[in-house]
Length: 562
Image (cartoon, rainbow, N blue to C red; front, top):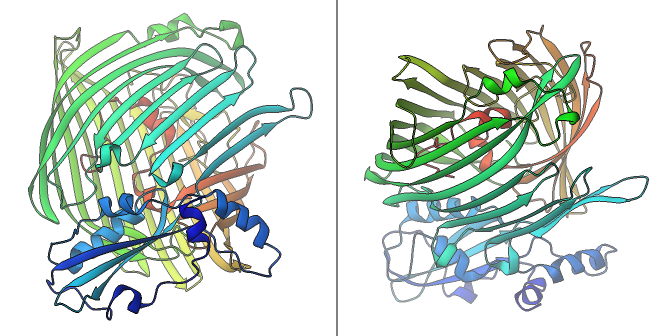
């Protein structure tokens, strides 16, 4: 039990006398010492009926190790205390998926310097999901793991599922502080039902703060999958797709902090092959559809460039129920320009361009942002453009009261002449109309508008925060040149969501949504959807069907290399 047992008995912030002296403001004083106190998600209350279950949860939880917290901080002993670096260190800590809250307070050390007290509260990080059936086998799937294994900033999970042909097995491991540095190491191995598999290894130093000088990435992936084309009222069409990808590169900061540019270089190689699925009888198959996507091998030299002028604004009651969320104010532009070369089995003679932009404006009560991405390829043989893909999202927040927030969203996505299987579904989980998840309407372009009214109800026995969301969505798809695409009228869905945060200060919001389609659809019926949203990661989220068709060389942003 170790650290968890010690933390179990801590119920309040230590008094200033324990750290020496009174709390002071940073004004260039020398930092004589840094003390770190990490806390578990829950604090049971003696004499209450929930003490026993929460005691069990706390006893199996390992607090984040103090050295992990300190390595993420920009300030170290011997440095001058700077208030901007304190605020930035708090933001970096809150951005970690296993930390819910973080504060850093300077105290007078009695000798002209300061002691920094860093206090963090962990997220509740056990990973557990079960699938059951009313007949044998009663257990159909499970996923189990820990998002902060032994408090070391590492995520470990394994999964299994019973399928028609072969069982699914998978294991994933992520270290958010590899080798004691702020490097991310991610490895995954998965085997799916029809012989598909996924192998991934990724080591990167993401650009997480304007204070760092460089960011870099080394990644390799070998994935086989099955893509299903929806066909309105007809049976779906399935194709198999194998994708291999490798990339190595980095960027260097010029100028800054805040107003800066990044310049860098990478070398990438990608192979894509589309064929019939391993089990052609499982869906209708068409050889002509496979012929639409010829085998491709490309090797590119890529130039990376970006501009950034951002600051961070702490807000509450936007996407998290109670926790502080850091939203981005300002402007950011990232671009990638790639030239196809005939080395390493590269066949393409082309120019590839990808770009993304972010703009955020507002106050703690009214805030809005735009994020947009686009990419395309010019083939020097045909002297034409293909693989053109774009998406955009506009989100606006308005806090009406302390516990009441209105959220409006516009989502758009489209593609032309794609070189890998591509469709945008009306009911896509991340970017579609809620209530139509079973709809088979899909096309090459999708537009969706959403309005949501969120209410924070309060706390349940001080152990969870709960809220309600009432929402209405309206959207449609256009056929374009997507295989089997159709153009639909505007379709509307309405519903209500139950929101929960465990513990109350968590940045993770659990949502149980009940959605009902308003317009006629042959397949759409009322749906129940359970999801978990992390407030610190929402600004880079893109619909999954858009991400699937992107060229793998495209980083989501020069500034947040995945």
